[in-house]
Image (cartoon, rainbow over all chains, first blue to last red; front, side, top):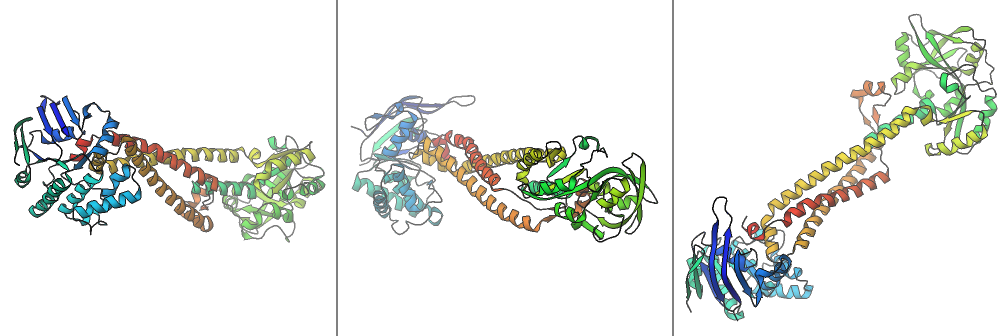
Length: 228
Length: 370
């Protein structure tokens, strides 16, 4: 069974004069353990697709089924709960809480899940070590570089042991060294822990690392290539 | 609030200590038209009885005549109060307000103490003579020359201009009243809060006489207290409204600045109830921090100025013409402070509702990209 199944997905935004067809009939299946990049020019519908898959936005038509659950039919509260337990998010602008340390940022989602202090400590330490930030646990985001902040965001996304990670242009704000570093970590997690990654990107360096590249244009899939 | 409280307290204190005392006893009807013949015959024994009533600190008798005083230059209507200087000292603070000359004790016959404002009006100085024109017991007009031995000055310009003090013995002799007769028994209590109970006890002792508290004698003073309480409530409402708008404004700014963070929190699984509670708690903590800090600072400021006083000397004349001292000693009771603290917390909770509602209305997918 596919971990993500997208059937006949449409999303139309009501523009002031004309409707905007952001997603215009997409059917996709993502299997467990995939390392998939969604590419396409600006305005092609990448972010809208990821938002709907992540339960952050409602489709106009079509279904998204995650691990057997049709999330497009869930209520707002159920969807929030589903996101917390099943989906990890990595954002372009990192979106860390500025007053929290790296450790607290990662721990926060476990706190929301009601995990015990010991469990939180153990998992946070494990994840920050995995992303190579074991020595920066007590640093606040403003003391970390962009690459380090994004690695904290990856650790946060992994904290709740989600079924997959959605990353919307995770390397857009990073320099090449940080991009390489982040990709290496994401690849390793994918390879060693079988974590499914679905990310949108413009970055050719990211595309070259992906094992499946889905190209979207004007809201439709124009190519779907598995590289390995 | 403390400032206004201080002003009112000072005015009331001045009314009690200089003008009214806590309770006065008269013949029924005397207060209506100050009729000279409505005197209390056995005033000395009555004063003795009153002094024995619980909560009474001091009592004295007075002869009260509304009449005329004239100098070589001009004349005016005044209230002449005949007093026993030593007894009066225990009831009112006239002796402490002497600006020039002396109080009425140990000075020869027909001495008079007048206010500074009246002295200016009559164009007289210390040791000058003024003529008091009064009606005697036989309804004949009579008069006497009185030498000014003291000039007093209170915080109330109008009072100073309208009140003169002479010895009971001098005014009795002039009017033909018996020395034991008086128009008024002024009573000072240990505590203002005892006025009602003391009034009941006195009325029970002397049912044939009329005993009134300072609020009844001077309804404008009672009105001042109730009006000030109302102003206080209006003042609190205005301050709380300003606080409410201030908090809403601050918290809306906070939310605007943190749209992306809130979007992220919603995206990673923070449900709406938790987001709502988070904003509410932040608002309440903001109000509590500001409120508690403000109250602590306010307490020490009030405490300091409550001892030192605030001298509004540049408005001295204006204050004096309204009967207020230009020295204000701010005061606030703990009950008011507790009520204000509770109201600040309630306002904080109430004010947090709108910003929290606005936060809930954020769309996480849009908020993340903002």
